[in-house]
Length: 297
Image 1 (tube, one colour):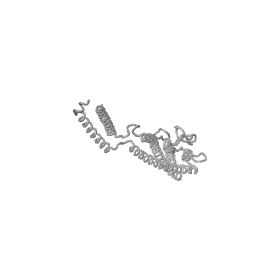
Image 2: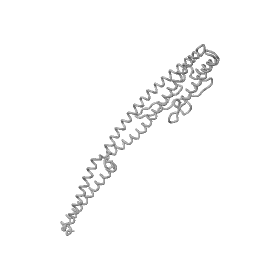
Image 3: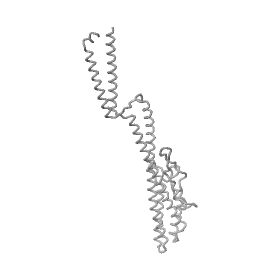
Image 4: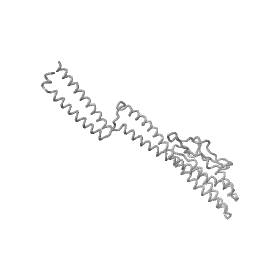
């Protein structure tokens, strides 16, 4: 009876040992094939919870990075448009100087007037440009046109202000500037009314109004100031982009430490486990085939 119990105990313990080794071998083999050491929540409950937090942070970071990229693109596009406006306004200032020259013929004055009108149309077209979302670069609170020609050559502008764009960590940035902020001046004057007055004076053979020239100069200064402001915002967004990347890199290191298996170490453990398993199986097979065990069974 005692021998039978010992034999059964031997078989049970040997079988359990081999099953445990086989399970360990299978797990290590899966770690090698997947490159992951955390295969189920039960493997490391604390690590699994930390991994969920990291995954949520990565999802938020991905959205923030997308917003930052869009903000960078929009600010760069707006800055480029303002730069082109500056060039056209500089040309308009040159034309004003030419138009004030007393030796201009009526034909020359008419040509200057025509070019000024073209400059205004060009500036309006730039102001009505769209960003990657199809939204106005210099519009208001909706997607309507930023600028339109009104009666008497004056400009009308979109109402309101576009919402700021979130860029992470509770931060946001205004990527859209209402065209009214730089194309209009106080006392209801704007670039449109100024150029309309200049064109009318030139075609009538009269002197370009001083007030219109002053408005043009003021608008040019405002465009330059707006471009500088957008440049500062772009620099801030670039800094946020760098911070988001750094945070993403840190999270990736933390995730890898929790989830990823070390290839070299895992392969060594796999080979070691396989060797022990094979030795155990061979030992069990040899012992179980002895005549005494045959007899006892």
